[in-house]
Length: 98
Length: 521
Image (cartoon, rainbow over all chains, first blue to last red; front, side, top):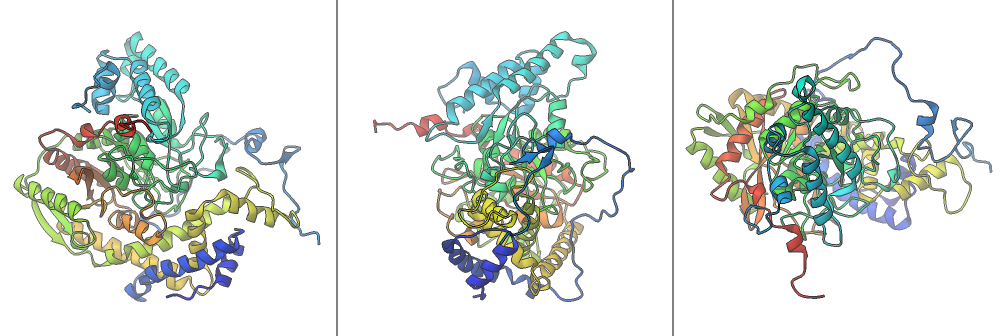
């Protein structure tokens, strides 16, 4: 089984901004090991000379004219905000004040 | 429902195809207000309560009736405006709650978006509004469309109208169950790995995943952007084709939408010619892995096609064995990136950490911990892992190469045959909880539907009969941009397999009767 430790999951959760409980960390570590084992066979199926496909259709550089279109008003944009002030999103401290 | 005793006029109205409803509206036999009210009554009767179908997260009676009244007024006025009405004008529809709507909440079945109101309509919603289709409400799904049973909804699972103790599949279980239970004749779904087709199979209805880019994805909350596709849920291939024609076409707001003309899909669904068709059966998806009942109905279908004059050959698609692994790596990677926007800053819920300093980083962590359910967290972690330094080439990189191999397998197959057919789902509807604690068992539900998403090809699921009393579906796949072929062959199979009792969609048991205990509790 793939070695995915509790510490690995803790690191991934930090990268993903996800506060997991102790119980979730344990459970995810074992579940992730099983899932990764089942999907890692993909690396056995391919060789270096196979190109990667990132998108099902070969559309490239879809451009439009640079013209002013409809945009939301500040009111519309802030309507669903958890907190706002003076027509802006209000957020908690960006820097840790320790 | 024809064999049931309930024969009031409301039931007569709702147990029809969308095409037939549209015809009755055009001839003035019924009004859209009558039709819409009949569906709202049906929703009130079967959707709620402890044993209800629970296909809807939100019902919008007032808005639907207002739209219906407008269409009725235009039709009654006669003249050019009435002539110009869309063929589906006045036919009600439901919308998967992953697709954003002005005036009705959109939750993605997540606590993260509880109470969120979209400031804009998805392009498909604009299209159905312009066509005068009353929107009955928003349907249930697995949270952010992540799941194959609708059990991962933060607002409770949807029940399968064929057996209320079983799931309707997922993620679009709500849309499929609503169509199956006569709560709506049509619904919109989204399909990233099978979320329209697999619930279609499990509920005895029809579901289409169009060619990637055929339908604008603007306003569908993204899970995996290179796989997601909006499509129709319906009772028949013809109904699905009618809705597909309405929602297809280029949209400047979705740079990945195809600039092509929309083909006449409904005409394709009315064709019944079979002779000369060369149909491929994917070797990798035919045998083991399918339940006995599914395998038996599928072989019946192949026999019927042969008897009707089609040539049926087996096709080898060796890379399909790796499709599930490639899908889960690509989907999780894209999902972990797409879901980064739910951070408690601009919209959605905000949760403060229980203790310690209230910094934005800790607020994001607490918000995402409280707002996302287990399966969403699992996929975010898996995606973050697959994209992280040191693993990227082996996992995400290899998965993208497998995608190339799958496209090549499809190309080689379609050089030889017109369409491919497979069972849509390896099993019929399963019981609640049966696969909930085993992510891998749940993922296997999508083994036959996933290759189409990876390659961008169109697919339809149509009913082919019952196994132990539960619906079985067959999937028809065609080359990119050849959606018309899926409707043609899908409709052919639908007619060949409908049996002596008529179409499967008309035989669903009455959910209220099944839900009512026979003795007092």
